Length: 309
Length: 250
Image (tube, rainbow over all chains, first blue to last red; front, side):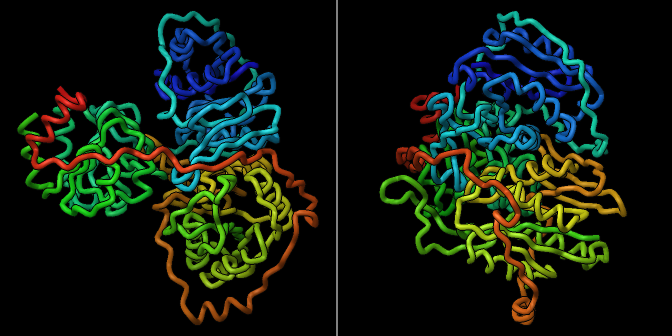
């Protein structure tokens, strides 16, 4: 077996999410190669070549791949992928956009968001917002998979010496182009890789009150998240949403503040190691998944919490 | 401009599903079925494009059993002009759905296909991207805003880091995220009128599409349950537990 892992990066840094796909590839077994497709991304290729379990790093360096447009990435991956038994990518929004397009070009039924590897053709994955776990076996000869990052521990990223090879062919369909982006700028850790996450819900009452969470987060070195209710109410931007349709997180410590605990939210955080819930409603479903629950008014508790850290 | 919008019949999002008695599949006996919420957002967007004078015709398409006509009638009540059901009792995988939709796309030649980004049953998030691959169209997935011009569409997408805007040539495939719009409710007169709108029924065989499954469901199980925790009295006790029992903060 030979596995091609599609790396996630920003043309200068390898996204650590990629290391989870390499871990999943290791549990499948076989030779692991990595594709870096981007623009002026040589440094990313060098970072990937340091990952001990990787044998070869393919680099496709062209302006057509700079923004990772699915229209251009998919034919590149589909062509390179024909030489492999498995094609994997961690289920970020970039991979979720590209990988099904790859699969359809290869006439393969992709398997999304795998949370466990049972064998080289059988995988577990959450369905119904994580309320059920399905075990799925595929008959396709090439398996196209996206990997739930939180379900696989990242492999080490230093000590290896994979060879780097260039992919010359350029795929530029010319039917889509990048206009602009509004990316959140934050000094805090990234939500999906932070060791501690503190999230606010509708109970925060407005966006300004999230400052209470930011000051605690800065003391803990935590990332700040939000429930869908808080995002829909306009308190905070969508990239902070934790849940089935937002980000899936599994930190060592997850603190849910003023979050009732809708199924959609639980689906995004219930694999956290320790969960703390702070809510004034003692019947809130969030308490059923919390290791430590505190029934209290968050506006009284948060300043006290910050002061005690 | 012609818009094709897809709707999937799924378990109502308010219901909690369970495995059946032998854990071989999801128990769907006698549960309430509805339009997939993301598809409802796609229908709403199509209707708004028509109200703005951009869209001239909206065709709603669904795949599934005969009862999926209910979801198509809902789409018609919301403002679609006509509907097509690709009727089958087989459990269709996203690739098979995309192939059937490609066959309809070839016949209808829509300028834009609006779809939900994922269905809340399988949570695959694949069909739109696959249809884009099969048609060779540009794709705007996870859309939170659309700006349609004569031969292009600007799509603002919800991505991990924030928002990204792409410019796509038409025809294009667009999949909706949660914040694209807030769907309306169908009015009673429109529900009555929808019963008179045309609803065409096809089969995968008539469309000459091979829908044979590529995957096999070996079983479903509930996820591992968390142990019930404890309630703490105050902040001091909480911090003590986190430091000395859970050892997750210093």
